[in-house]
Image (cartoon, rainbow, N blue to C red):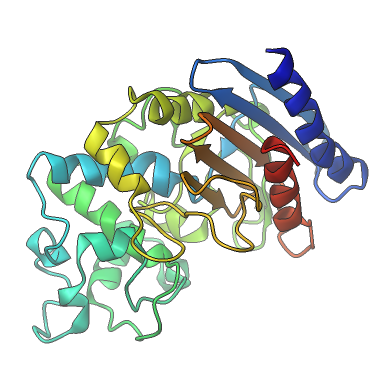
Length: 334
């Protein structure tokens, strides 16, 4: 534990400096190893506008795109293991109405595996929420829209569609599903890290999803999950010790689909969020609100950095990319 404590103390320093420099209001860093040893520490403020609240180790965070890897990816991979879906089959095997008015549409050829690995021509993001507030109408819009074709990029659309798959197969909306131990789709405002002073909802968001499209869809596969550092670390340890998912699902989470991605996750590449000292057997992911999780299977260690870097606005250079890399390098011994 002393070695882990020393490592943690060094890794916490960049977060401490970022808060002291007012680059982010606050954050929580947590590290866990395969044997269950863990350290979690909080610093700064969970909210500064319109009131000030302190950050705690138990503060709930809008995990943003960590939803993709903690919620959606494990469920899609479990369905594949059960034989309910074939990862190399097109989405229309579950969503036959995808672009149903044009049977030659390229969207009808997109597979589950391509969505998991962000290997589709969908745009990175689209302002779906600007087309209305009726969630069922917006689902129909996503399914029937003629999407602009581009080079494969990391795209929320991939996981919005995978979320539709989960809903169609379960007969439930995502918000009616079990989010998993320690997770939820909202949080009590006074126990959550505040995010943005939203320009179209006209309030500071705390405990409700920040992602505009997830809010309008009233639940989606790409964002919307809330959790604490403890719940994120519990999930990570389940991957490290094999208790959190089947061996085949964990193997796929580690299996490369490209130079930068596996099934659902990122893998190390030059300049990635986990820093330059991760082992090649590391997977990780980040969230727009300032969250991140990295799992190094070779070293038997995982760490999460949860911040409220977009509070009270996203239009500010918080330095989050450099902060994540600095923490990752110190976790791995720089």
